Length: 122
Length: 421
Image (cartoon, rainbow over all chains, first blue to last red; front, top):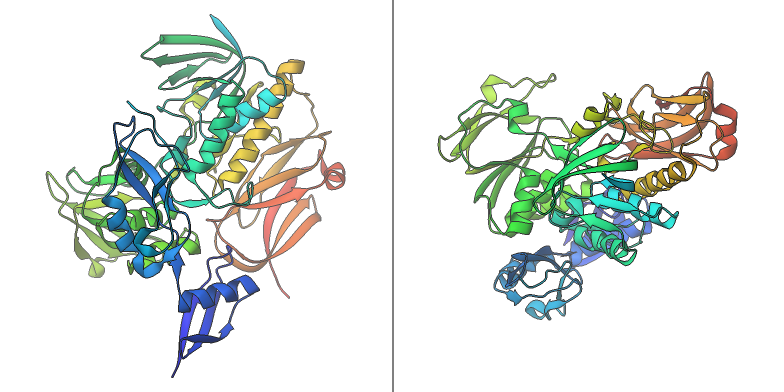
């Protein structure tokens, strides 16, 4: 059973509107891309879409109440809201600095939650 | 009165870049005045990624990008006053500022770099009818609340404006558990990047209503809902299309305006199209020894270009201080926005400048299959084909020394030419 799926590319500002032909959960063909990166993106989007999640984590005893964080690698798109729940359960103690790993291997994805900004103790 | 060689007003990416470059060029007494509690400017609250692709080849978050420059400022020992608000600049470069430690401060500056950034257009400026219930914020204010102060502004959200800030906040609010009911956009197209339409709206099935606006606000103490309507070709609401949407929060992402109150106070000439100062290729304003860079000149899309502009302003401020003036010349090219172009920066180019000059501009509408052309009088001196250009994506054209030699001091026009072929 073949399926046609429309994908808008986000790799560069061109935003090519592509069409992917999917058969048996494999991308057989991509049309409408202007470059190889676009075709790869279309394939990934159809089979295993992933996203980097950026959010904040609560801090205890810090000059700031929050620090910004990111997933150090993209996570499966379907797990975004689950990841948010996990991250929102955390409270870390000050001091925090950018680069600190605040949570390892979130939801068994081998992706870590890393601080992108820091704060000192009050 | 305290004397400082270079005072930089604003410690965001533009101001930090200017201060760093001035220091690298040998300026000794530099002072950055920043009204917030930390350096970094708006980047502090832009916790999403996508910054620094051009400058660092990496996709950094706002705080990470800012952090690189804050570290350099600290390493170079550049003096900074935080929590400090500049109230006035006099034509002879006396700066009046205030903070709770020093009280009222007056500083005699040798040169000044304006890097105050921009502010958001508000509901008052839009004249949306209704009482003044709680729950209405500009998208940037909501962003600060969520990302730095730890407050969720509301649970059921309508967003007016599909520029990048509106799109980013649609995602952010959703991630924190709010329901974003829709994003309304007055124009028939979104001003935001395609990647944001995909990753902020499509990913979360948030409807984008093009040619729509908010016509009324409901609720007395707290927002209860808004009335949205479709608009016609001229932007006027169509009465038959009025629709009530229940919500407790309205976020406005309806325009950024360069913050030039101080520039006006000192008498600097502004460009009506950008709402920022007129600048020459050295980023010097109409007042000698006063330079400007970053969003205060024109609102940027990429912080990488803000940094480069800051370097340019800092370098020229240093030259001004060393020689007590930048080379004055009668021979200046005026750079004009021609057909299809809203504005071009810099507004003028002096003759005899070394090296290449980058022109930054925005087009007036979405064009497909066109040529971006630089004309000197009747002659086209540079031309590039573009598949698609849009107002939301700043364009740049580099003019090399040979090309410049041939043009300056004649006037230059940047325009969009439709492809007949």
